[in-house]
Length: 198
Image (tube, rainbow, N blue to C red):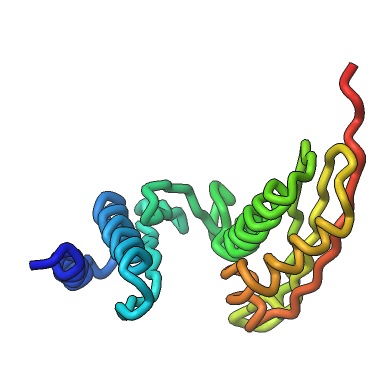
């Protein structure tokens, strides 16, 4: 059996055995490892080999306390989630809808900083601030999302920042592409000159 066939078989068996409510982090990590190995084989053997879409895994396990959940990702990281007090929670963790905005900020931020580094821009600080406006009626989806990119550095080229933002928002950021199908997304960017040390 070829390496590719063995990996595909293991992946199918793992996906078939996934529990309905909570996926153990170790299992999620193994699924991600197999998918990455298959993607690497696909790349090394040419585009003639059909390749499945990238699948990410996540789970949320109730902590048997109010609205508290532990979220887990296929990468093995975990975080606490809870509802707002007005929704019956205690505010003891991320709210799920907040996490959508955090994910968007991280996704596009990683694109932009990577592009700026490739353009050899001297960036010393970078923040992505996201504000989401939700509808009044349930399911209270986001209707408008504003992204603000603030780049600090020495002699950073404003045009390089503009291009990095454009590439992230139109080509690379999966979170922008996903949320942009639901909400109207706008963005602004600014460059600040870093203060000289001393």
